[in-house]
Image 1 (cartoon, rainbow over the protein chains, first blue to last red):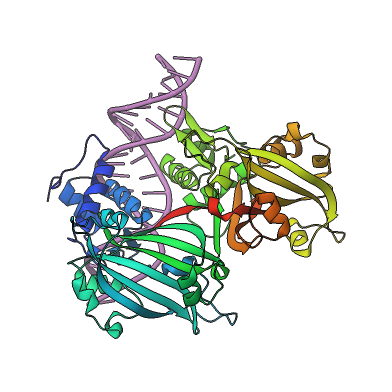
Image 2: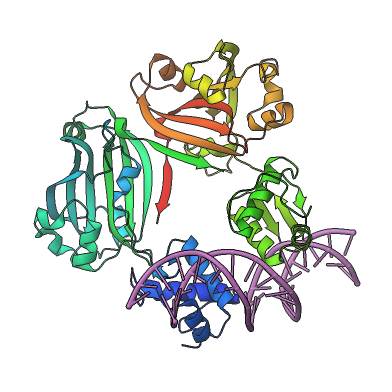
Length: 246
Length: 246
DNA sequence: AAGTGGTCTAGACCACACA
DNA sequence: GTGTGGTCTAGACCACTTT
């Protein structure tokens, strides 16, 4: 390949066009996760640019988290790895500082429903707004820390209802990838605080009216479309978050 | 200057040593905020390295937020600018989408106290653990959104008590800089959720037991030492936070 | 016009991984 | 040993800011 093969944009600098070009080949799964992309020298020859320019494009993709460099070995497409990301918000560790373990998952209900309008818009459902709805609990040492209320597009995810709980396991993203061919590469989380209604109080083992932390999550494909949308309701006493601002 | 003038480290690559060297000169206020550092060519000559290598060091400091480049003009030490950072957590906007304005600030009490042990450790106080304690409210359109409980080291900040409320204004960091010579360049925030006690409920205009969001903040100098430590108690219904994870 | 950062090149040499 | 990425150099030319 000696020239840009995709609709590459305006008068961007060369390295930026190269960067977008490489990103497009990753997004198109021409280079799947774990794959070693061609060596710098090879890419430089193919695109008829200097190695330095290709390096710069690659460096930016590394900074964005798309690629990973291993000296002496090659440059690899990063395998995204955040299913633990609810751990980001809720503390699933015991006082006995054990390693971080995936909490137990229990599926309460799976059914085909008519989705609320907001969900239908997020999942880009047709006018019937049909979706697969999943309710599940996340437990830790016998205590329910989080309950989740999740929607997947129908009919694409119809088979999700039939899968056995063992086949699904505690993490959904690997199932999306293995069974449905959807790779989740990013999530957006929005945090807010509410109070437990009767149902949530019972599930979480707290009083009605006690504080509950809501995590509204969208799981996204590389192209930004939505794979699932969910709200997680977590015990506020398990919530903790740290950041440094500069 | 032709060689490293500060305790520069091990066998790091040249560009990394240069980067640390430049960062040290910024931290030492040799190059204060807003200052234009020497041109690339000049630095390259002074340190006897190539321009490309200096560029790489500078690029990293730009990525870290320490420097800012302006094409054709120069490279400047960034002027940190987050006093609005409680806005990160609490929504101070009205439904009428006006511009983002600094909320009103009302000082309730300023006094010299014996600090709790945790605070004393954070502020590195002497054995008497004396500190200046400040209580204030942040209001928006007449409603109290956040109350703050803040500690500053004594005797360094003794004069903070005598300043008039007008002199202080709604933002503390400019006062720290102007009056006490302390530049806050970073903060760490830790978020958790609690419930309103009688005092907080009254101040925030909510029921006893209603959810309250705690923001535990450390305000840091460039060298990582603590200028102030505070806990903000905010109305949970005003709390909202968004992130994207990749 | 002079000075600054932004882009791009061409190539040397080093450190590390892998077969 | 061969191939890969990591460091470093030297210099050309461009785009923008300042005076």
